[in-house]
Amino acid sequence: MKYGAQNKIVAKVKSIKTGEIMAQVKFEVVSTGEMSSVLTTDSVQQLDLKQGDTVQLIIKAIHVLPVKE
Image (cartoon, rainbow, N blue to C red; front, side):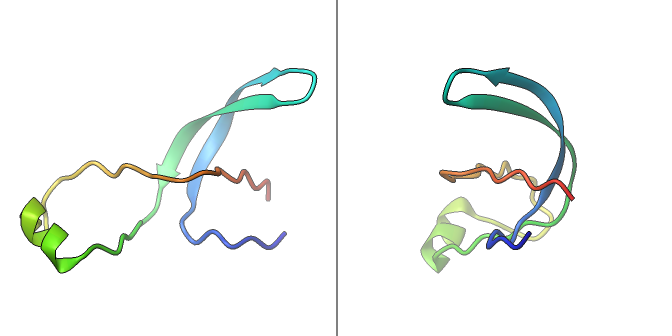
């Protein structure tokens, strides 16, 4: 299966709640790889980001695409 998402997070299916039309699948994150973000230079300066800083990554997306390999 081909998909356009670049960043991948490995996860296990934790639970599945099914309804008549939709299903909710919860995932437990097993391991993560490297992620990247593109920010304005102003944002980097306002956040005072430096190499080695610890930050929280908040992922803003409309879709989580589960891919079973």
